[in-house]
Image 1: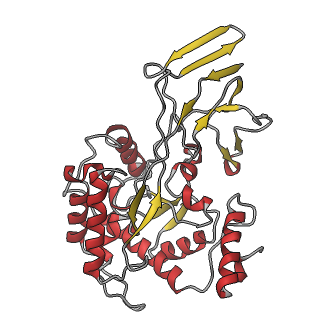
Image 2 (image 1 turned 90 degrees about the vertical axis):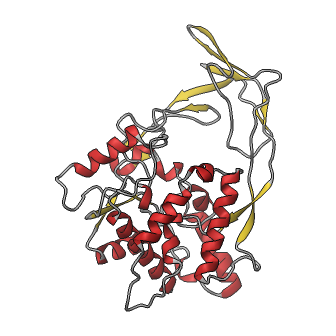
Image 3 (image 1 turned 60 degrees about the horizontal axis):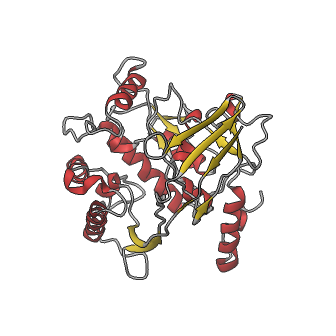
Length: 350
């Protein structure tokens, strides 16, 4: 089977300015005076206020390249100044970041044609198919490219699952399914995860780095158990915003919701997340509610703070495990750090 796709082009876009503080849920900690002996007490009133403001219609979903993004950045900068944080980028709180905006040219109209043993199928652009790319290139040409179907395109050794086993995909177009029919684990951590309440567990989506040990230590201090990603087939490690950091050699903590909810019967957490995913996730009904059970959000904020404090007070540079695909990128970053400051050598090539 082969596929012919008329050429389409992408236009490079502008530079935008992005605030260093990306998690609105951490705003309440900015004003906290802390010490090693006394962990901070987070303000529920401030947490509710920040959540209500940033999720309001006035912020238009906080989308990139929108007026809502500008409002969000201004809100974060104001919070950082109020907390007494010093600007971290040459005297500024924001940093120029290049972004790419891709547009599919419609003249001449793009055309998707699939040729197989049983005949030829043509798909009308805009009605039966859409075409776009996330690659930073001005032209994509898939003319006469063989198509290989690989299910969900997931490799999960811990589940004895490899959709690419014994399949040659070199030089071919890979056709994959999105998510899994039984996926019920939206990321949405912290104050935006459905407000289940306090839990005995927490899910660690990407656990192939030294950061996993830090997360387990902090969770244990809370009396919580760290569980592995419950839905690796969903591909959250590669679908989350942390992928760009990983490719640049920067390990990031990616936590999912705990489901063992304190004071609730077994199965409650999983059922509540399924209901949230089916009826509110990425829908207009996913609106701020002051009557949520905010105890779990406060619990997670304390966990995030403890993880950050342990990393800040530590003396080692976290790395991916030796067999992980992002290890080489991190080693390169650490070599650069070792060359400039003499630090970071203890995490290289172990």
